[in-house]
Amino acid sequence: MLIAQITDLHAGIKVSAEGVEIDTLRQVAKAVDHLNGFSPPLDCVVATGDLAGDGLVEEYRGLRAQLDRLRMPCYLIPGNHDDRDRLHAVFGHHGYLSTDDRFLHYTVDTHPLRLIGLDTLDPGEDRGLLCELRLQWVENQLEQGKDRPTLLFMHHPPFVCGIAEFDQMRCRNGEALGAIVGRHPQVVGVLAGHVHRAIHTSWHGCAVHVAPSVSFQYPLALDPRYKLVPIAEPGACGIYRWTPEDGLSAHISYLKPYGQAGNEDHRHQ
Image (tube, rainbow, N blue to C red):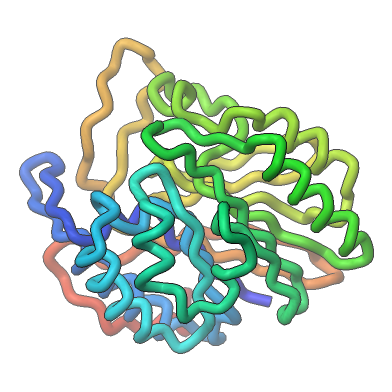
């Protein structure tokens, strides 16, 4: 199974990064071209939050016009820049989003790898949250699929990454989720976003992969005195290969530089 991760799209806004003006919706269009051209074909795409710039209906409509061009299923979860009601209003035709009337979380059982999307949005907060209701839901889903290899995906990383501003905005109750993951060895990996950088770690016996943003990155600011501002590193997607024999491997696939069009061929990636 081949899975692509796109994250932190912030569709519908313009961002200035080191003198480069970035049109985030154009970056999404490039990502769609990039993924449609991938070979072998991808089985699905997971979009791990901060889908819109300000959570506005018109931003989601513009985003939908691009994501509808994908040739494979795309599964969405919200991030701290998203609005659940507006997201659902525009993407409600994605039937999996209707599984819960409070949170936009769900399980997809139609692929070789079972997919569980976690809603970590805490409205009005930049940091994430897995409340007791959501933690219990995750545990129930994992209990029901003990015999199925499973991939979890969420917006906010549940671990400390060393970038101070993002650690202050990580997912609260992350360690509680870690305890659940530790009890369920069928979880082959956890995917997250939010940080606008590639990060990989081992957490409660499980691999966690944070993908870079499709639109713009933040610097590797391990000095807590450093203020985060967007930088002009290229947008990128996570690509994950899973087989029963080999397990999960993680790759980063970069988009073309800012200012260059999409329509790419990836037979030799």
